[in-house]
Image 1 (cartoon, rainbow, N blue to C red):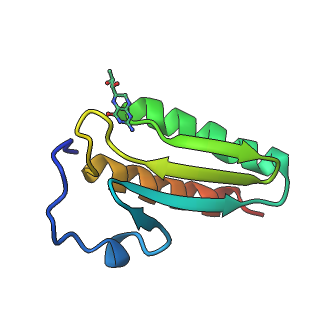
Image 2 (cartoon, rainbow, N blue to C red):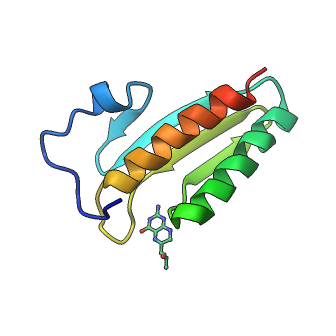
Length: 97
Ligand SMILES: C[C@H](O)[C@H](O)[C@H]1CNC2=NC(N)=NC(=O)C2=N1
């Protein structure tokens, strides 16, 4: 996966419909049943982030995880952000009971 900026006409709505485009970052709020479930999600995401060497900016408050993704080195959105967003969507589905 590339750390090159995404093309200007990239279709975010088609690719990651649950994420909001906010300038050079994409954001999504995940709501879980409780803290235990939210933290299970974060643990799995953290493992994946290490594997692909691409890390979310995020915060957690009990059952809520707010995520912002951007490629800091490129100061832009790249394919790595899309890859991470899709993985987080899939992990959330896996963790939600
Ligand atoms: C040295 C290391 O590869 C870099 O700092 C990686 C780590 N994780 C990263 N995560 C994100 N979101 N953006 C980066 O540019 C980035 N760079």
